[in-house]
Image (tube, rainbow, N blue to C red; front, side, top):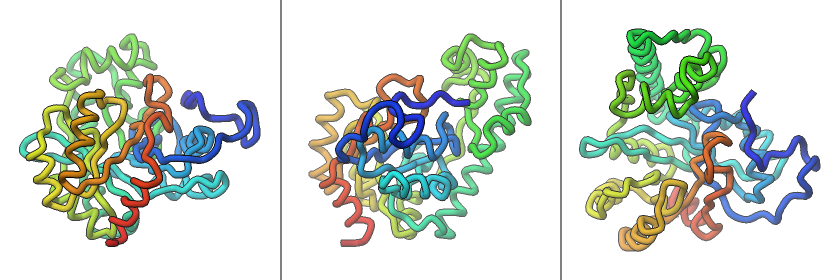
Length: 294
C-alpha cells in the first residue's frame, strides 16, 4: 500500500480539519499510472486538502489516470485538467514536454503515446536482463502485478530491489545500478520535442516545457517557442532561485506563460507534496485561453 502524501485525509470531513480556501493549481503531478506512488483518486484528495482549485495529472506518456480521477475530482470540486508529460529529445538531449487541455482521444497523440509506452516496455526488459547479469534477481511478472496500471520504469525496478532486500533502498538502487550512467540503465524512448509540441497543438492542447535544465539557454527555449511552445515551468522542486529569476525574465520576452507544479511522485520526496508549487489563477486563465486559440 503506498504511503499517502501528508495532506491526504482519511475521508472527506475526516481528521485534519476543514478544507482550506481554494486557490491555485498544481500543474505537474504523477500517479500510479506512470511512476507515482499514489493513485489518481489519492492525488485528487491531496489537491483538495491543499486548497487547490485545479489539478493536472501529468503522467508520463499516458492519460489513463484521468478517467479514474474524474469522478473523485467532481466529488471534491477540484477542476481536473487533462495533462500528460511526454518524454522528448531536442538537439541531442532529453527534455520533457507537458501538454494541457488536449482532447484525450486524439488519434495522433494517442499513437505517439502508445509508441513511447511500447518502447518503455522493451526498455524495462533490457534493464531487468542487465540487473540479472549483475547477479540481482528481478521478477518482472511480480512487478507488473504490483503496479498493474503503471508505465513501468526505473523507479519500479528500484522499489522491487529495495522491497526484496537486494539493496538498502530506492536511492541505493539508483546510485549503484539504475541511475544515469550506471550499468543497468537504458535510455528512454523519446519523441522529437518539436513533433510533440505539434501533436499537442493538433489535439487542441497547449504545450509547456517541464523543469528546464539550468544550462538550457534562451536561444534553445526560443527555438521551441518558435515551434509552438506556449508555456514554461518557472518554479518547481528542482528550480533554484537564480534559475527561477532567469526563467521568469525569459518567459515574457518569448511570449511564454510561466507556470509551476510540484512534480509530485511520492511522499518520500521532500518538498514535492501536492500543492507545494502552484500556478496562479491568472496564468491558468492564460493557459486555458492559449489552448482554445484565444
